[in-house]
View (tube, rainbow, N blue to C red):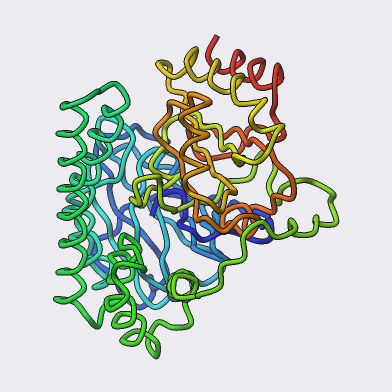
Length: 398
């Protein structure tokens, strides 16, 4: 569960860091219920290991410890964990997801990858749902990485090469969908199926959504992750399309966003110009400019050349742009992308105008509005335009 999924934290939550000692545990028992422990191979002594819980549509940090000399750790949350999805993240680089609560004592072991990324092929005991989820992610993540690799290569391809790459992308997406659907079918009563559901578009896989949500409504319906996916499904079946509505009222802070520097950027999951679902969280590990704009917005179009210039200057160093359009007409949106030379591949829009789900969730009341996000998914600065954007990128890259 990287970055949190669509799914937006509507109220800023203060984070409580709880530091605990680290030690080795062998088997879960009643006394250790609620404690998470284990070993991560490939990390140094003193590596920070954080526990985050999915709350109010976001991953909120609730506890932390440091690893022992051999990679062992123990985290004992001060407040009992509620039933739901939780995440361990090692050194802010390597995440692993658990489905547990204060009645279990999961023991986790795994090897961190050479680069940033999800820990696959981990071993989990003491939590059946977490163990099942680990098996699913071990199959899913390599395929997702391959898909992302091809998608990133497409911006430098042309003609037949681009057509071939597009076919490969569609093949990977089909394989990912089939993997998730088969996992749901084989594990219909497990809350781990919610993770598989997250990777499916509700517009295309409404039957799977209805099946999983119904199956888990009594046993897992109180969890916030369940509520998030139900909201995603309910939104997909809504027939209301009211483009170009007045912007939502500003919050009492007067800011053109609910989020500011130091907040973790909520994920965005939305369709691109080809109708394919992409995520803001796919760019974790990059410095990302989250750019809210529209083809009909004059100031946005005048700002676009500046964004193109800094993209060309810093893209090779790890800078990306994720553009969210508040358009309601697809043709005008796509034409504006081509005309303004917005050459990055990450363009999304739900064609809802001012009712765009991402802009409403972020509390955007005027555009253009740009948010600079660090490699760790935390907001560096907001309200960036013109020279201010380039100055901020110079600090990071030059």
